[in-house]
Length: 171
Image (cartoon, rainbow, N blue to C red; front, side, top):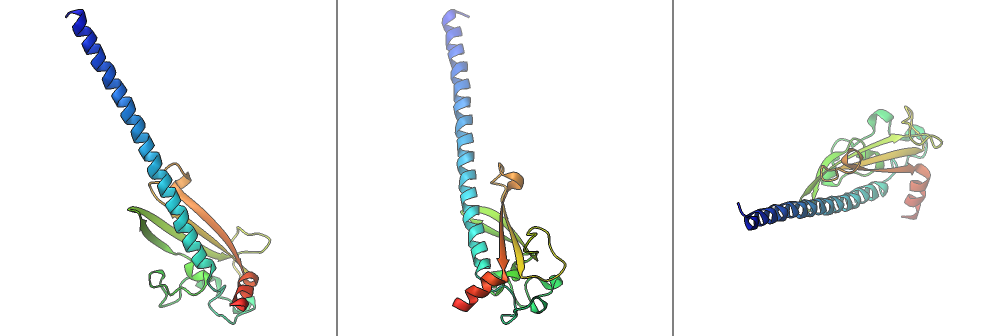
C-alpha cells in the first residue's frame, strides 16, 4: 500500500470518528431539548391541576365549620358518582388517590395525588383525626424526565379551612 492510500484511509477514519462525535452531540442535545420541553409541560400540567384543586371547597359539606362536621379521614376521596374525568369534583379531598394519565404534546404523564389532614404545626405527617388543615401532594411523572429524581415533579400545597372559608365568603 502506498503512502497516498494510507493517507486516504486515515482521512476516512478521521472523518468517520468526527461524524460519530457530531452525531452523538446532536443526539444528546435533542434529548435535552425533549426533556426540557417535557419538564415545562409537566410544570404546566401540575400547576393547572393543583390550581383546579385549590379552587374547590375545603370540605364536601359546604356548611361545615367545625372539624367534627368535616369528611372522616377514612372517607377522603371522591364521593359516589364523582370522577375527575367528568369534572364533578367539588371539594379538595375529592382529589385524594387521584391516579390519571394525561398526554400533552405526545408525551404521557402519570398524575397522582394524595390529600390528608395535617396539624397546622406539623404539615407533613398525616393525622388520624380531622383538622382545619389538609395537605395536598401532587406528583407528575414521565419517563421523558429521566434527569429528575424518580422522573417526576412534586407539588405540595397546604389548604386551610380559614383561607378557603374566607374565599367562599367573597364568592
